[in-house]
Image (cartoon, rainbow, N blue to C red):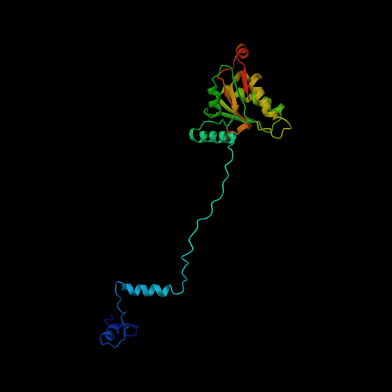
Length: 236
């Protein structure tokens, strides 16, 4: 077993300490010490530095004073009463939430039986009733839509649905009035299906707006005698 160092092994720093101790290895000079704080200038030196920095600056003419920009001329016009009413109504809408009934547009429609509290129709339009079923009649011919709607209403009543959604479209492609929309409302408000209907109203924008109708259904069909004395009131 070898007890000494292998002389064939390269050890470049083996004699480094001896060279340093013998001062035979030149060392780099230490950097000059710097003061921890800057030298403060005297007032005279500061003035000389400032004068040297401002040597090429041209002073302003002291006779010229700054003038504010000319004001734009404004003309007071006579207030428009219609504009004032619109602004006041908008302010009331923002502050209190009252003043406009957005749903009552030219396409808005609602109907309810006589004697029904008007608040029920308003609650139906606001979406206070959970929609339990829906049907999409959009794009169907009138002759095909009527039996489909009738089966849908009868099935919804059998299953105990209270509020349903009927999608019929807005009828913008119709030459005069929206045909399918008008027929659906007529079937629900005047046809045999009115025996199952308490109230109906145009849907909210999120459910189709004027292209769909909320329908509030009865738990049991209304009788013939009650149907004559308690017809549907339709409001456009």
